[in-house]
Length: 88
Ligand SMILES: [Zn+2]
Image (cartoon, rainbow, N blue to C red; front, side, top):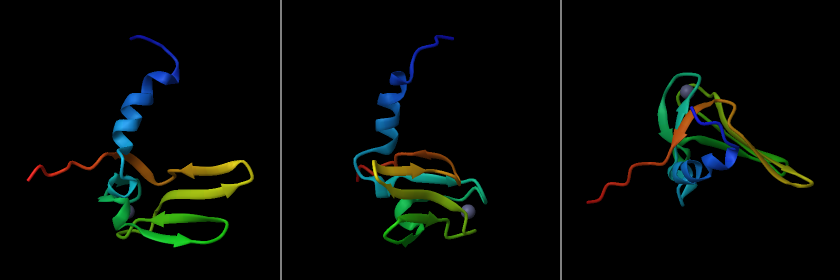
């Protein structure tokens, strides 16, 4: 196994996030449901936003506005990947 710094994950991470974040597929840690970010239920406030699983209400994604920028958390997303685009 080759050990390098985190720059090695830049390409795979950019590929997984894709150019349209709402189409990213998230695997819920609470119920294992797989769905796009767009399918989640979002609660938005001036302090930040939370996206919850539509099936079990687990908090999938948090976005908090801080003085130095946004902080994104994935407390209830076990994994994510770019959505597969249907070539048709
Ligand atoms: Zn769930």
